[in-house]
Amino acid sequence: MSAFPQLVDRDLDQLEAILASLLQRTEAKAAMVTDIAGFVVSSSGDTESLDLTTLGALAANTYAASAAMAGMIGEPDFASLYQQGSENSLLIHALGQEALLTIVFDKSVKGGAVKHYATIAVKVLSTHLTMAAERAHGQTVDLATLNIADPNEIFRRKS
Amino acid sequence: MALINQAKREIQLKIVYYGPAQGGKTTNLERVHHDVQIAQPEKKSKLTSLATSSDRTLFFDFLPLEAMSIKGFSTKFQLFTVPGQVIYNTTRQLVLRGVDGIVFVADSQFDKIEANVESFQNMEENLQSLNLRLSEVPYVIQYNKRDLPEAAPLDYLEYVLNSRDVHVPYFEASAVHGDAVFETLNSLCKMLLHKLVHPETVPIAS
Image (cartoon, rainbow over all chains, first blue to last red; front, side):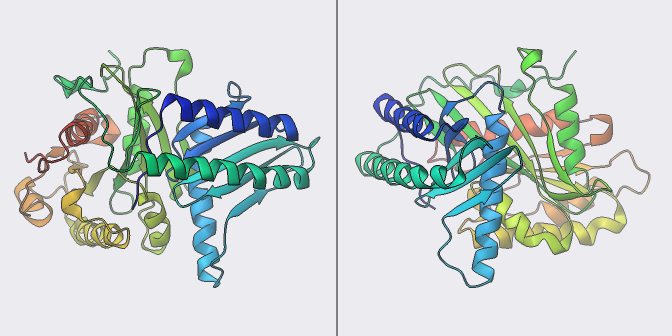
């Protein structure tokens, strides 16, 4: 399994700019990039009222389950998942093998428009992540400042 | 696989609680969620359970936690459980994707020994399906339900489940009472961080 590419500040700025542009064009509520396990990498929009951490984990697993079902019925080409609601909807789109784009939008926004602009954003985001992966090939991360000298109580019980 | 974000100085790690049905995986997460000390209580994370009406895990339970005591990086852990029932094997494979470390929650009761062994073998097979070997994935074993009178002797459980080349840390627990729940979690977190900082070393043995 290949890893999600190592990103630098400039990458994150660009991912956020792409997501912000997507929201501006679609008037969706929020958008985020997660890795394939659901870890949030970048987000834009209504990041306060939405629990993006949980949403990312649920989106990743839902996408994985749908992709598995697609495989079972002989459909190898599975790239996106659209959950349409009466008030709010979700679009989850693969970004290559290692990442997902998730967009949340309400009923005032047309799903077709979101899908259209999401397709454009997916191309730009995927290109950017590919470039980051190629640039960071073999690069290691300096974790020297990670202090694990006394990690016996990483999580503590309330007293 | 751990997500290390150098730009944000953030590390995210995925832990999966694995084990036989009704062994106490969800109870572990509930106890952690209920008892964990956090810096800003108003920002307490939510435990999400995708369960059936009879509280059996259908897909997974999910609890995000941020560690307070690690300096240098913002360190976030995502805790998942898998459904224990045999029929949900595809679901277990999905939840294992991207796993960094595993807590194997064994049911200590005598009549659950076979279920423990089957679940452990199933875990190894599912890791293999993801091109992972058990020897490469940090894991600990929690012998749960030690408070029950039907609990098998520890030596016996150790012989059955923990007699591989690398003897992994194990814990005698009663998750429903909160006993050894945090010790189990902290031990695995320590192994994961050790592996991150020293990826070339072998897994920590007890």
